[in-house]
Length: 79
Image (cartoon, rainbow, N blue to C red; front, side, top):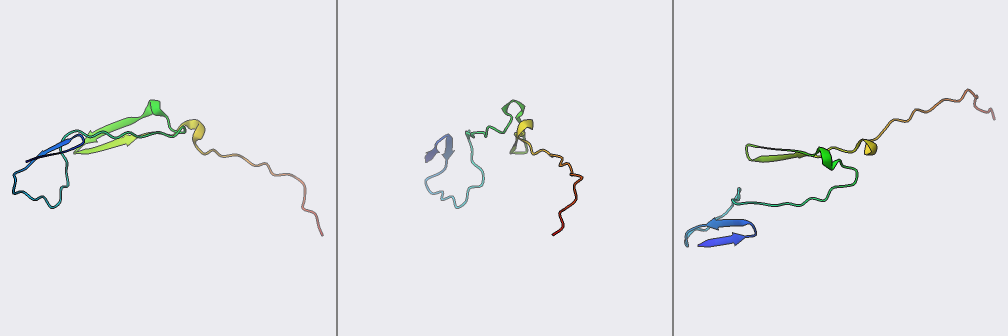
């Protein structure tokens, strides 16, 4: 018997009854929409030991930044 999911083919005998399937075969496609705060020009991806790792850095302009606060020389008012 041949079953088919989108982008995945699987063959098994008529009397096979799979209980749990941990790994799929065939190709797989995933589309991800990126935030405007991410840098699409610096995306890196690695595939090792069956694991796909994707790194998408944040744009420098979107990163949190420190703002220095100057202290006034005036003293607090007494009530």
